[in-house]
Image 1 (cartoon, helix red, strand yellow):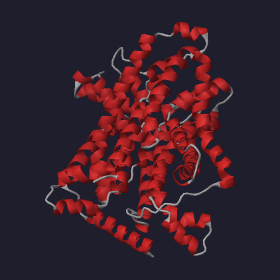
Image 2 (cartoon, rainbow, N blue to C red):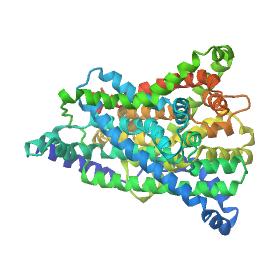
Image 3 (cartoon, rainbow, N blue to C red):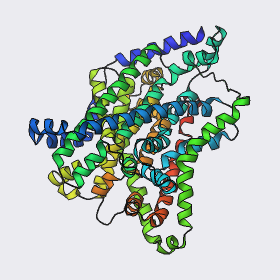
Image 4 (spheres, rainbow, N blue to C red):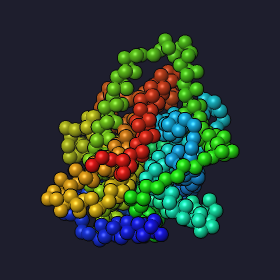
Length: 528
């Protein structure tokens, strides 16, 4: 009964916060961030509309377009569904089960984030050259995308309570029914957020599907821009991709809104119960091991086999490898900082306030993740040449592209971590004489800091692997690990690519390692 009262009280607090009008400064900053992030969308609309309505209809009714659309939707749906089916049980084991070497399994669960999809595809192709098509793409994209679901769900489980499950068990419900009634409502928003990231990531994916020769919208867009340089045709296909992303974002918002109305925050209900697996320990460990083994272990084994070849060691240029590593670190850090600056007002606004304008702002913030990197790259080439020619082919423009592309990853982390901070603490701070900005900095930002940091790390590890935008926007003579790796893999020089691939995994593994424990920060564990 006490849990139900606390839940209703927390839900009432959340609803009250949602009814308050958004501060003008916060709303203005969020709108500015949306305007900045909309530069690729504006370019896309202008380019797609340059040929007129007849040209757009002609493109959409080409025989190949429905097949591309079907392939894209089918792949995104299959990968997202599989990631949820694997990611939720994995997160439950990491957060609620008694496991040997728990910290090790948490790190391994996050490591697939360090592996680019095209690198995982390279590892599988080197092992089984006959792999191609839908099932190969589904397998590799699922393996590298599972952490997008596992990490937020594990964080939600650690911040939640098992008290509601216990109440359901005392009322005669079985363990699965108790989980559905007590735990699932707590982790459903995090599951939806992770599924949204996976779906948008697959919609914009290019590397793995290209290597596996599976035609989707992104490969057609890349071919149109590269081979025939038909920008209007490519822009129309990219517009279709954006419309798909809009539908996905709106669906996630609707599902999340229903979850919030049915179940409020559980802040303050810190009761946790650790489950003893007993005879299920071996199957649980097998589940935890299979994704890292296939997503990380196989590519790493192939890389080490290539690295041990004498030809690879003789051809290795250590200076070029070191410079590419430094470029990768600097550009990804800059992109993460820009993404956080853009995502912060949007994430806070979405966490604290409701309304059509807030939903529209959040939706625009998420759309960039559904854009192919080449579209973002070309839009910024056009923008820099037209508006700020002095910035053309500079590191700042490339870091800005990373920030725009991966801002949605930061928005989700900021929104969820801010939503966990009780508004009552902000009210107490205001009654003590602190202003809105002081309250946000001293109370909200401090308590939400683990989630904000996790968002920055997620952007950094993703930016390290970004390829199409980097190819277009990198300054002359500036190469990253992803560029060097792709240049060698594209011409089947797998031995020469191995050192760059191994370094990329090692560098990206650092933020992935930090992310494995980023969700452990809890409100009741922060000293105020």
